[in-house]
Image 1 (cartoon, rainbow, N blue to C red):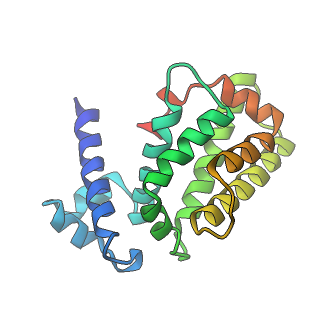
Image 2: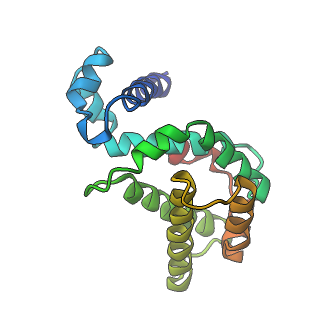
Length: 192
């Protein structure tokens, strides 16, 4: 029951933040104003999130989990297309969150998430620690993927969702493909 209440509170903050960002630039959204709109106090917000960027990252993860928290793992062009299609529905939100390049920008949180999830998937599936080479391959893949994602968001590239998903899948290191195809994100802390 506690987890359900915790998630409801996070969802309330997320939905309110998503409404606020439609009319207010990200750097002008203050936690105290967000809390007033949620009829709560800042301490409640800080119980769940370190700052607004961690809230944005949680929104990204919530959307990610809609595709990847199935009981049967699937990492394929199709699943990447599904994820990008869902994100495209909220394109305006994602564009606005990526306009901020401050010290705690969303990109840092997403890169951290990408590294942590890849590490857990690889170590769980292969039952061994991540090698230094694998870590660098994951970082290289993550930075490239997120760079292309941002260009796609900003319409700086004329690539379709399917072409972007295909490119991302084709350039995923083989060991990472295997890990993602055999690891269920459903029970991880990332999708809760």
